[in-house]
Length: 250
Image 1: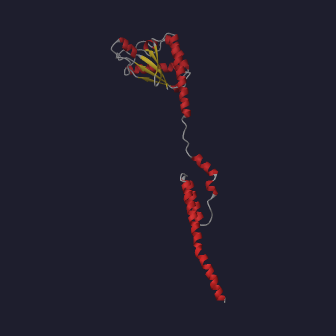
Image 2: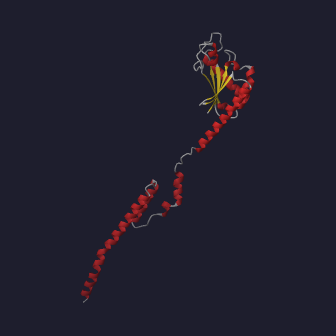
Image 3: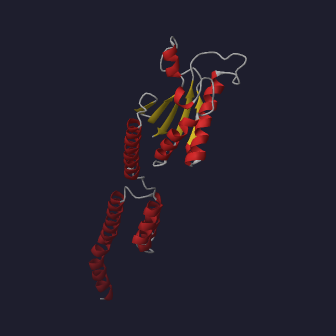
């Protein structure tokens, strides 16, 4: 009798035990589905978070725990964002550039008014160039022929111009030029280069000493005869080439 009951009990248990693998299989399918969904949603995640996710998933499959909450907390996200490089905004640069252009426009108008009021149009030429605002001084207003000492009557002009130049912080290039006449042995300057460089240096030092322009804003160049504005075929054209340019650079 007891054997018969055991057979009946065994008969009732066998179908149930045969279906248990379906539970395990369904759990495995569910975990795999979650795994691929998380992978898809985290496709843009950084490597550190991805590694943390993989470690947590390994823990899940080992039966120890589910995903660690600390791997995806807001704090860790903020830390990751703070470590990411921030693209520099060019808006501030554009604003500064616009302000600088406005200052140069005002500078140009001030210099233009000064030249007109003092009837210096034949001696000083004002030009608005791509590289900056340029003042061109003809030789005769600043220097005697072949000399690099500034004339006494030019002092007030350079002082006034220097005062206007102080209204902007831009760098200033002072550039000397000559004609193509060669120096004789009696000249104190060995070449046109030396004369043009000495003249531009003299103007630079005047602006520093008399107008208190900051030296770091200034530099001087001597081009000699090699950047003429006209052919050296007449005395009038040679006089045009003998000049000093003061350029407020953009």
